[in-house]
Each structure stands twice: as C-alpha cells, then as structure tokens.
Length: 101
Image (cartoon, rainbow, N blue to C red):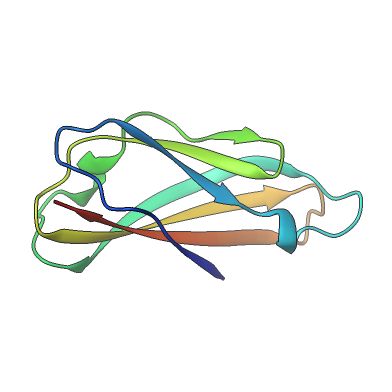
C-alpha cells in the first residue's frame, strides 16, 4: 500500500486529492473502477470522518481524484482509495494523509 502525505488544508477549503497509482501498474495495465474510498481518523477526534468527502472519486489516467471539503480542525485523516485494475486479480489500495487546520 502506498501512503502519500498531502499538504495541510484549512476547514473552509475545497480541494481535490490526487492518488498516483503509476508505480503500481504493470505495462499495459489500467485503472478501471474506484470500488471504495474510506476515511479514517489517525489523530484527533471526528465522529463523522466521511463528511470530509465531497462527492465521488474519479479516475484520471493513473490517478484517482477525490474531492474533499470541511473536516475538523486539529484532525489528521487517512483516506484509502480502493481501485480495481484491468487485471481482474489485482485491486490496489493507495492511502493519503491530510491534516486539517
């Protein structure tokens, strides 16, 4: 699993996080479907961490783009994007951490 560290965000910002899967794909393999994006609290307290998500994730070449909003100040979140590839036997998870100020 790849873990990316995103720059901090402010509560009021609307951002799009990009998860890069390029290094995980074999030659000719492509991203097919985002099967899930989960949000975990790594530090701090947020009773509803999924409220960080601002719509559905989309595939852009070798990247998955996930819009985010809001969040709770003082919380570090970990987002995990689960993606099925063109190889039916390969599902890749990429994680990213972001701190909300």
